Amino acid sequence: MSFFRPFRRIKNNRNEDNFFLALDIGTDMVKALVCEAEGSKGKILGVGKQRQKLGDMNGGVVMDIASVISNCHTAIRQAEKMASATPKKMILGISGELVKGATNTTSYIRRDANSKIDLSELKNIVHKIQWRAFDYIRSQLAYETGYNEIDVKLVNAAIVDTRIDGYKVTNPIGFQGKEITLSIFNAFAPLVHFGALQTIAAEIDRELIAIAAEPYALSRCLGYEDTGNFGAIFIDVGAGTTEIAIVKNGSLEGTKMFNLGGRLFTKRLAQTLNISYQEAEEIKTSYSEDKLERQSSKIVRESLQSDCEVWLSGVLLTMEEFENIDVLPSKILLSGGGSLLPEIKETLETREWMKGLPFVKKPQISYLNTKLITNLSDETKTLNSAQDVMPMAIANLALSIIQEENLPSKVLKKVVRLMQI
Ligand SMILES: Nc1ncnc2c1ncn2[C@@H]1O[C@H](COP(=O)(O)OP(=O)(O)OP(=O)(O)O)[C@@H](O)[C@H]1O
Ligand SMILES: [Mg+2]
Image (cartoon, rainbow, N blue to C red; front, side, top):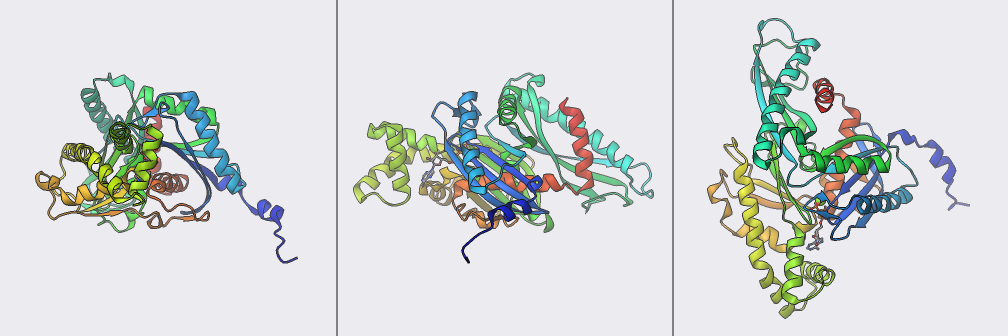
C-alpha cells in the first residue's frame, strides 16, 4: 500500500541523543520546542505552548514555582507528542529586568611578542580577564540593585571577540603578537530568580545544556559571526519584559531589559473599557489584526496612546544606559508577541525619541522574521509569529553550545565552572 508509512523504521533510525528541548518560560506563555541537532544545523520537530496564569510570573520572574512547572510540563508534553520523541537534554531561557548582561573588553600585554600563543597561556589570560570582568560587573550590579554581591549568580559567559594586535581571530592559538584583546559577555541574575529556574529545571529532569540569558540568545540567532560587520539593535517585547541587545561589528555590546510589555496595554484596556483581563486581551489582539470596526478601533487606539509613550520612554532610558557605545547601529529588529501591537513599531518610527542617542541616521525598524534564523528548519511549519522568535533563538544557541568547536569557548567554560561554585 503506497500510503503505508513504516513508523517503526523511521523511529529506529533516529538518534535521539541529538535531540534536545528548548524551553522559553515567558511571563504569558511557556513555549517548548523539540529539536534535532545535525552538526551546526537543526530541525524543529515539535512545538508546545501553554498560557500561564496572571500570578504565575511577573516581569519575567517566577512567582509561583509549582504552577510554572505544571505549565512547562504541559507545553513539553505537547511538543514531544508532535515530535514523537522525548529529548534527554534541555536548554532554558532566562529573562527579567534583573538579568544583567554586559560585554567587558580587556587587553593583555604579552611578555614575549614573538612566542606563539599556546593553550596554557590562553587559559591563563582567560582566567585573569574573566575574574576581573566578573568582579567588575558583579559590583556594578550590586550597586544598581542594592543586592549583596553574594546574592548574584553568573548565568552565562561567552567570548564575543578575540583580537591579537587589533586583528580579529577565532582561535588565538599559534599566533604571535604583543597584545591580546578579549571581549567577554557575562550575564548575571539575582540568586532567588536564578535559583527558581534551577528548581524548575531539576523538576523537569533533563540534562541541562545551559540556562541562557534570552537577549544573548536573541543576539546570536542570525548567525552573523562569520561576517564581522553585522550590526543591529534587537528588541523583544514580551508580555512582562522588553529585552534589548546591541550587536556592533559582529559582536555583542551588551544587553538590557525593562519590565514593561504587552500586559501593560491589556491592563489599560481592561481598565478603560471596564472589562476582564481576558476580554481585554481578545480585544487587543483583534485590534492588532485590524478586526475591529472603526469606532471601536478608534477607542482602543486612543486608550493605548499614553502607555505607548510610557513604553517608549522605557526604551529610551534603557538605551541611554548603554555606555561606551559611540555609534548605535541603525537597524532595529523587533520580536516578541508584544511587538505585534501596531503602535510599537509606529511609535518607534514616528517619535523623535532617538534625538539624544548616538544614531548617525534614522534607524530602520523591521520585524525579525523566523525564517531568518537559518540554522533551524521548522519541520512543523507552525513557527511564523514574532512570538516564536525567542524560543527559536534559544534552540539556535543550544546548537552552538552542543557543538562548541571553538577552543577559547571551551577554556572559558572551564573558568566559568570554577566561578559558579
Ligand atoms: N496580535 C497581537 N497583538 C498585540 N499583542 C499581542 C498579539 N499577540 C500576542 N500579543 C501579546 O504578546 C504578549 C506575549 O508575548 P510573548 O509570548 O512574546 O511574551 P512572553 O515571552 O510570555 O513574556 P516575557 O518575554 O515578557 O516573559 C502578550 O502580552 C500578548 O498580549
Ligand atoms: Mg518572552
